[in-house]
Image 1: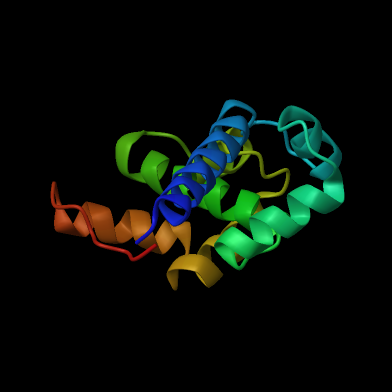
Image 2: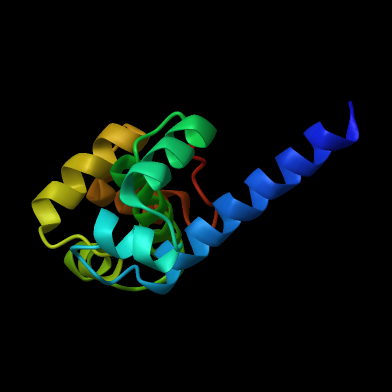
Length: 129
């Protein structure tokens, strides 16, 4: 591997980490959109779209949603919050939409996942990201 490729990979990883930090710091904003996201990363919307898409194979709105769902999964494991509270905490404005997205991402609804956690006791149920 040449130095240029290594530097490029490092630069891309830093960019993605920064993008995740921006999302995580603003998770509760339900309408976190491309205007806000691109402004925080000092990029045009079109450049941001192309960059995120090329690095993750996902459009930015799906990238944002996946980070929200990852945090929701962690909250389901670590907190005693209702599913609606978790949905709002991670930036979903509609708990039903949150439930539908969670089921698509993890193959199980949040309530089914919580039920499974309770049945398993202290063991954490593995769900793939």
